[in-house]
Amino acid sequence: MDRRDWELLDRQMKRFQPPSPREGVMIAVLVGAFLAGMTAGSAYSFGSHSSAQTPSEDGKTTLAFFLNSGQRATR
Image 1 (tube, helix red, strand yellow):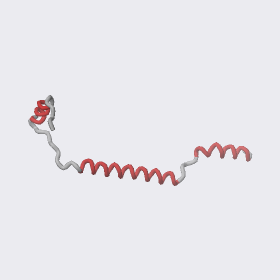
Image 2 (cartoon, helix red, strand yellow):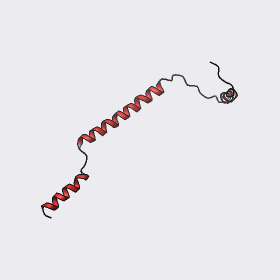
Image 3 (tube, one colour):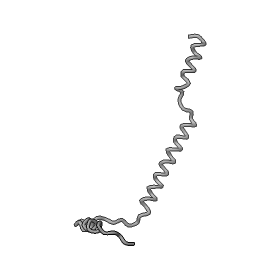
Image 4 (cartoon, one colour):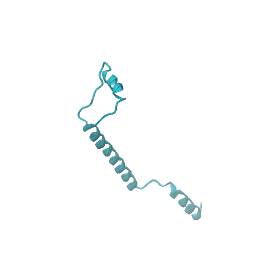
């Protein structure tokens, strides 16, 4: 291979160079921010509801839901 071949090979291989270290750091920061946001959002979402209605074992809750579904709520 002569000098011209090496230059051509260098130009072709520039497309396949690994990303610079700065890009790796940026990706790590973005993934960290995403995970922190998901954690904070889930803590806020699930932590704000202090009381939750539990279903009854005998089905009265379901029966009441279906009986009241035809009526309009007046508020």
